[in-house]
Structures are given as C-alpha cells and as structure tokens.
Amino acid sequence: MPGILIYAEVQKGEIKKGAFEITSKAKQLVGDVGGEVAACIIGKDVEGLASELAKYGADKIFIVDGPEFENYVPEAYVQAFAQVASQFNPSIILTSASAQGKDFTPALAARLQVGSISDCVDLSVSSGKLVAKRPMYAGKAYAMVEAVKEPQIASVRPNSFAIEEIAGAGATEKVAVSLDSSKIKMEVKSLELAASEEPDQTEAEIIVSGGRGMKGPENFKILEDLAHTFGPTATTGASRAAVDAGWRDHSYQVGQTGKTVSPNLYIACGISGAIQHLAGMGTSKVIVAINKDPEAPIFTKADYGVVDDLFKVVPPLTEEVKKIKG
Image (cartoon, rainbow, N blue to C red; front, side, top):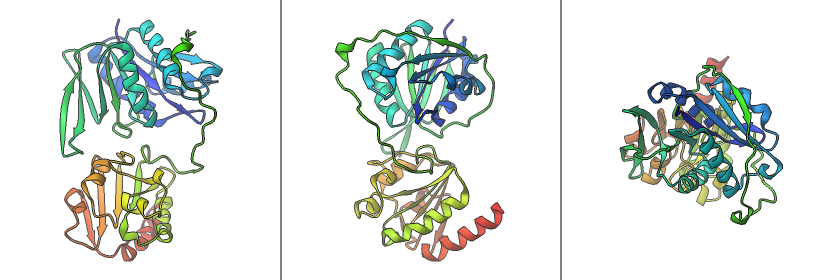
C-alpha cells in the first residue's frame, strides 16, 4: 500500500527540526493517501535517533548507517535514499527545503525521473494528488502546483508547519544499500559548521534582524540582547546592506541572495525592505518593522510598524520582554 516517505536530515548528530515538521504534516496527510508514514535516516551512528521520529508520527523508520555516510555527499545519499524509496514504494516523498535539502531534492527527483515541487509553504491532497502552495516572483504571488507523476516529491520551507507529537508505530529497519562508487565524484574531507549556540535562521522561531540603519557592527549588540531575551529559539539576522558593509557575516543574511526564513516573529530594525529582502522573509507569521522612514517599503509588508529611531525603541522593548518573561 502506498504511503508517504520523508527524508530526515541529520546535522551535528541530531535530526533537524524541519524533519519533525514534515513528519507531523505527513501524519495529517496520510489519511487522504493511504498507507503509512515512513522516514529515512542516512548517516553514521544514526540508529539511536529513530525513536525521535516515531514520537512525531513515523510508523516505519528506515536506517541507512555506515562510515561512508558520515558527511553528506549528494550522489551517495541520493543513491541510498532511492533504494529505500524503491523498497517502500511511496506515493509522496517529502523533504525539508534546507540548504542540504535544496541540493538533495532535485537530484533525487532526477534519479527517480519525476518532477519536484520546491520550497513549499503548504501541502494538501486532492483526489490522491499532492497539491503544494509555493511562493513565486520573489514572494509577490503564490502558485498552487499539483504533482502528476509518482512518487510526488516536494520540499517544504522550514517553519511552515507546526510540530505535533502524534506517536507512530516506530518500527525500525536497517537497510543495506549498494553504492555505485563510479558515480560518486566528490569526497568530503571535513565539515566546518559555525560555532554558535543560536538556532540557524531557517529554523528559528524568532528573528531580530538589522539593516543599514544599524549604522555599524557594534550596534548589533542591542539586537543580540533582544534575541537572547526571547530565549533559545530566537536568533539575529541581517539585510544584504549590513552584510555588504562588513557588519555581519554572510551566514546571517536574510533575503533573495541569503537565507529564506519563515519564523513566527520577524523584527526588522533599520531595514528599508527592498524586494530582495522581502523575498527572504515575506512568509514570516508576524512581521514587526522599526524604521525612521515612514515611507520605507518594509511597512507595506509589516503587521505592526513603529516609525521611530530604532535606538530609542529596541532597548526599552528588550526591557519589556524581560519583564514579561520574568
């Protein structure tokens, strides 16, 4: 019987949050599709992670474990996952539109000779077919896209769906895959990740972002203070202008040429709101803009706007959040 298969991305020995989101969503959709929700974990020493996926709705967890999967290598991971997909025979495959997912998903679709729907923000099933909502034209419009050939593949923008603890059967199965080494043209010698306790911007629930109005790198400290006050699910971001000025590293950049984010709360401080920036954060659940210029384009997208000097607004805001948080 067909079902839904999700790719559970692993980083730093942990399953990424996006995998739990799509597992929860798959559990909601599987009633309209039939079959089970299955997940596939690929990596080295990842068997112990299976129970986490069961907690969020996975009925079956396929485990591909071996030293050759210690680091993500596109061709090796695609070969392995394709073999799992052939065994499970899903009608739908879901992945997370993370940096890795954006590389993995189209390659998998090419291997399976089907199309893929990228960067989706909502999913539904109609007459057994997957229907995906995705932004287009830099976020100025949305398209409803239907997959016509199985397996139907879609990658989902992180933070698009809530994580729900709906226990699945959680049956595990180790899968021995056979890799064609002649197709693997690269080798990862080492992986260097940013040393930060803050969540990645793509997975953060709250982002406090700064732009040209910050006036210099030293002033981002007030944004960091506000983000830390919100707690461990919050982080900071930056516009392209701030990154180009050298005030923040490119890893903080939100926008068309940076990261695409969809937090529950996005606070834009001193950011004018060029279309390139709006394309990267326009699907945020709530947007708050703080800018001295009442004509700044960011206000057309904001749910709440404060026309004032951010240096007069952000510190008192931080103190009020501290009082609320206790």
